[in-house]
Amino acid sequence: MPTDLRRRDDIAAAVAAHNRAHPAARLPRPAALLLVVMFDTEDVCCVSQETLRTRGFGRALPKVLCALVKAGFMSREPGTSRIPDTYRLLALAEVP
Image (cartoon, rainbow, N blue to C red):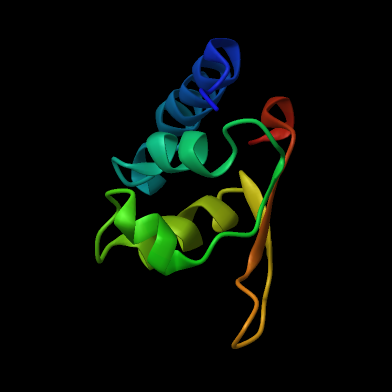
């Protein structure tokens, strides 16, 4: 299912605003695209990192995920060996 254009634009704007407000702690380049892929229609994502890698996110994926959690764009609930981590998109308007 295609991503809602407004949702995509809101995510891109929030990442850009964060990077302007925090020039010393800018998010990695693929951060906005990763958020769009993970949260294309829902505010919860329970997809393995391996699946995300098949969608074009390489070895830097763990670093980008950690940066997005640290910046407050999403929260992470650890999974198990059989269940991937669960990420929740936080309200974009509340992101610092």
